[in-house]
Length: 584
Image 1 (tube, rainbow, N blue to C red):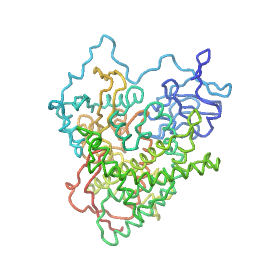
Image 2 (tube, helix red, strand yellow):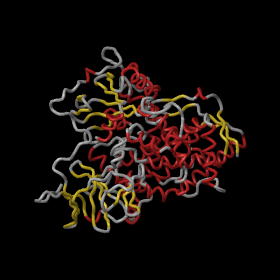
Image 3 (cartoon, rainbow, N blue to C red):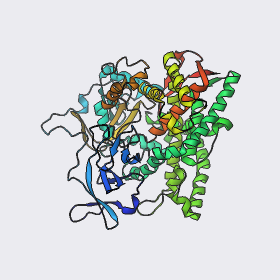
Image 4 (spheres, rainbow, N blue to C red):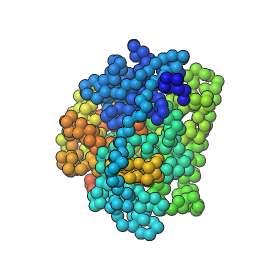
């Protein structure tokens, strides 16, 4: 990085910063967001003070920088928050010699300063935890299908900070929200995703932005953030409507025939179509034509991730197990589907530079993007990011939709409010035709928040210390695995009224919802710079499907509530949410 004689740091070329959108940069480990305003270029701290999300994925609207995660707005000229006391830290910024230069403090503040040198730190050995066996530790107790329930059960027995032993490594398990928030906000500098997870994803050809670290992550994150930014989702919305109309047609046919539907599988058809259209620009149409083969291959990889992450021994590396053969077949099929698509885009862009300048989907943007040295992303990185988008987009949002319907089936009052809101918003339409109409779906948004509070799709998040760290009064040696339990803080009876009850109204009450966010208890999409960039898209999809469903149908559960189980693994999905639809 170029440094001037008086300490100014060269951030980017002037031409890289336009007038219509913010730009994220990393300068000496500090995340910054750059804006071009009427008075010139501005540089601010690049993470939102609310939950630490990257502001570069936000919008410039009405002279304000609006965070895409929870809508906090900051004056573009001053950094002051509109409607709140919080203010973005501002840095001196100058434009000269064809570049933007910034001046940073000599010492950057940390998110969680360590105790003073006189403080006595606890070691990992001082933590309580479940007794284990020689060599294997607690690994034999980690049932992948019930993994989140096992860890949550131990937390109730041993407390919000305890230790688990697995072969070759100690693991600290945290359900204390402030400590968990500290870990999330201190990524990627102090903490990272678990090295074992990265290794497993690499074996499955999925080492994209999800598992990348350091410079590799920074190089890829802008592509994903830009594709999922609110400004681009508004452009993409008509295609979302088209896909929702297909689902409506399928469900009308099912209602007429009295068919029983597995809501999770139905929702996955929808999310697969959305993700393939957004990420790849391809209309798979699994809703009408059936995409079971592709969906099957994605599920094989997804399930393998969960099993391998907590396996006692990596048998798949030494033995030709049936699972290993299934994984190889799935990867071969996905390569056969994606590799020609990548090659086609590369060929088209090489022939037509204008196409590269105006990419129409995430994959086209990745193919067009160049690193600082002018090189393109390697083919394996393009494949990995496309695959990660497909896998992540298929399962997580679909599970939340199914969980929401599951909870509404037992709550007549909440269902009636959803139906009334859908009727009022859609009027004579069957589907919300414009994105602005969804902004009025406040109760359905509350249903989504309450669903993710009780049934977070990612109840566990595995991290690792990059170097020796401290959390509170605990010394964390480099390489220590850290498991964050994301559901327990949100259902803690000491902090949440009637925590096990499904009550969307708690999100209508701004005081109650603000408390959950302020205390870092509700973090279903993570927190900090690596907060899930697909949060906005997921909440749009959830409201779009719920409004369509409850405007057009009465939903009747088939079977008992007790038949529905939380199936663990890489994520937590519902099994047994079966319903029958009746036209309203």
